[in-house]
Structures are given as structure tokens and as C-alpha cells.
Image (cartoon, rainbow, N blue to C red; front, side):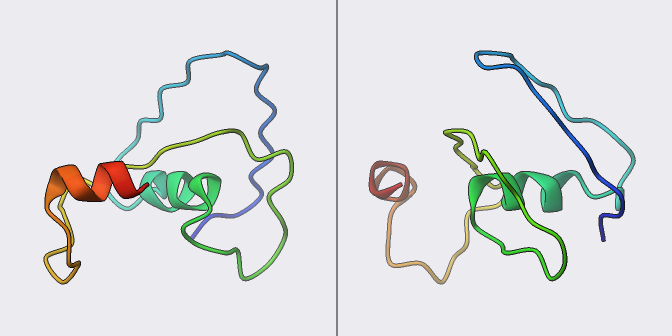
Length: 71
């Protein structure tokens, strides 16, 4: 769960997200990539983003390469 996140990043800026397990890193990245929708608040000015999960979802009808090409 993410709370009170307010993030402003200049265009063409490289950002590294780090933190302890369960701190919300994956949630933040999934929100920025548009994979998940926030239950409260909003994401504005969404950058062009890609998200590659650590584990490839086995239920998808793609190879890993096909998945990346599809995205």
C-alpha cells in the first residue's frame, strides 16, 4: 500500500527505486506503467514507461520475447 506519495520527476531523468521488501516499489512501478489503477488519488502526467516483472506470469499465452514485443 502506498500513502502520501507526491513525486515530480523532470523529463529524461533516470530514476532508481529501492527499498525494503514490502515497501511498495512494485506497486509504484505498476501504477506508473498503467498496469494497476489507484484505489484512491490519481496518477497524472504519466511518463512513457515500461514494466518488466521479476517473474514472468506463466498464465499468459506469450513467450517472454512475445510478451515484450506485445508491450
